[in-house]
Length: 147
Image (cartoon, one colour):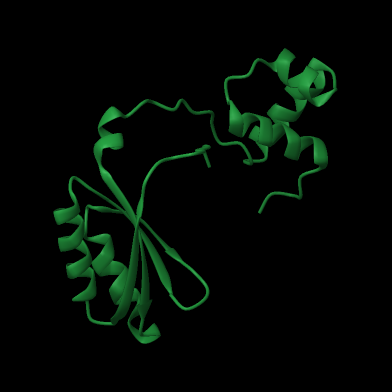
């Protein structure tokens, strides 16, 4: 784990999350420091492995037409690894998170139709160790930042 980040490093990373293509001079103005300071900080963050790359976000018009859903899953804890392996085999499931609370897992799903989504959820419920699911559709993206 990299050393703790100071306030300036945290502010620099936050600015890059909003727009990783900001010029160094503009970053320096926004952070109230010298351009050379930003350059040194970026180099240090890269060398420490905190920053591993800069990204471009591509428009995906086909993604807007897809159905996106979150499915919360309650499982028998002794079957967790089998459930996760079964979920990983489904190409419609983009991510699976462990969560706290009433449910144990959260699956992010993307399908072409509500019928396909329904079928995926039915298959999830059929997995040994899955006790209950709760699903909700995502309607629109209000904010999206790179990780």
